[in-house]
Image (cartoon, rainbow, N blue to C red):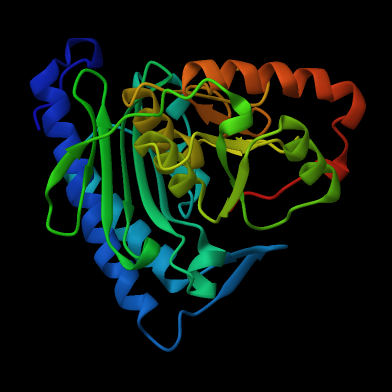
Length: 300
């Protein structure tokens, strides 16, 4: 693609960029699934409770090679890359955010709850997103969105369906997606205080996001005092917002993709009415539950 100032990108430009992100994410997904089917995924530990596998590394390398050729000049902020490779991204007009395997622990557990995520932010705002779920519920699904183009799901045959968040306004009837790992008593109490009809544990943050975007769940709530990595938020945020929803931290603060790589506190996603009500209730609960280290839930 011939590079232009981001302010001049029109609908056709966004379609081209989205196509490049789709190609990169699908190609990476194929590589992830080859490792998934193998006997040895080569697990290493980057830190406490922070595994990385051969799939993470191979998918990261493929995505970087593809995007550096297709979209030269746009910094790529990727989880498995050396931070020195994306130093200075905060001053760039646009940046790409890559999580090559979101839900590595789920990948290792072979429960299918992992995905490949690529997002593009322009002027600090999540604008284009792709999430490929190669094995969730035993089927491959691809979710893609861009501002002005809408949000879509592609099935395993690449048939495209437009998606949107639910219109439910009663929190007591809501189905809420929450994280599967690292649940604490305090975090469970905060979730219970919301009064949702059903709480559904799902591994990857990307899958929780697209479940909201498709109406599979009404909400995604991560009521933690831990910060969020921008590569965990950019793609699902772009998709949720293009599907008519809201996506912020638990204080209602938008993620700033020209800010630090780690920011905010937890995540809330849903239609605007439910999102506003959850933010209000979490604020009311703050005095009761506090924001101590005991609240922390590590990212998927």
